[in-house]
Amino acid sequence: MEPLNLTAEDISKGIERLADAIRAKNPNQPLALVGIRSRGDEVAERVLNRLSTDDRELSFGVLDISLYRDDFEHLHENPALQESDISFTVEGAHIILVDDVLFTGRTIRAALDALSDYGRPAKVELAVLIDRGHREMPIQPDYVGISLDTCRHDHVLVSLEGTDGLDQIRVVQKETP
Image 1: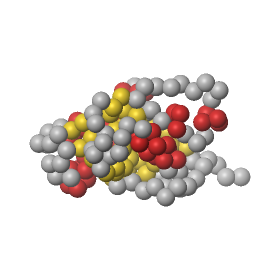
Image 2: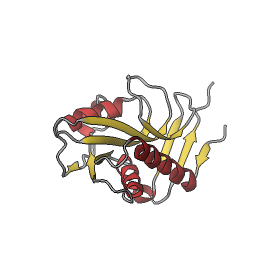
Image 3: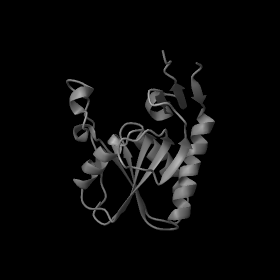
C-alpha cells in the first residue's frame, strides 16, 4: 500500500483549525498552552503564534514526560531526558495541553501526572494536531487539527520544521499477511 502523505499546507491548516477552535471556545480568556516534548511543544508554539493577535493573556510552557510514562522500561536503557519549562503559575490556570498525535491516550495520562507536579490548574483541555483513534484510555481531545482514519498498527510519522527540518506527516500502513 502507498503511504499517506500530508504536506506543510495540511499542517498549517490543522494549526489554524486548532487556533480557531480555541479562540471560539475561550474568547478573550487568559490561557496557558503547554506543549509535550517533543513536537507537541512546536505545535503549541505555532498555535500560540496564531492566538497572539488576540487581546488576551497567553502563557507558554513545555513539559517533558519521560519519567512519567508507563512504558518507561521499554523505551531505552538510558532515555534522553529533556527539561520541562513552565515559568508561569499552574495553580488556578486554564491550561491547554498540546501534543502532535493522540493515539492510545497514554502520553496524555503521563502528561497530566507530570503537570500535577506543578500545581492544580482550574481547567485542563487537550489540543492535538492529529487524532488517529485507537484509545486504550478514556481520553478525548477538546480540539483537533486533523482527524486521520488509521489502522491500529499503522505508523503516523510527524516531521516538523523546527524539530526535523521539514513539515510533513506520513502514515505508513502496515501490510497484513
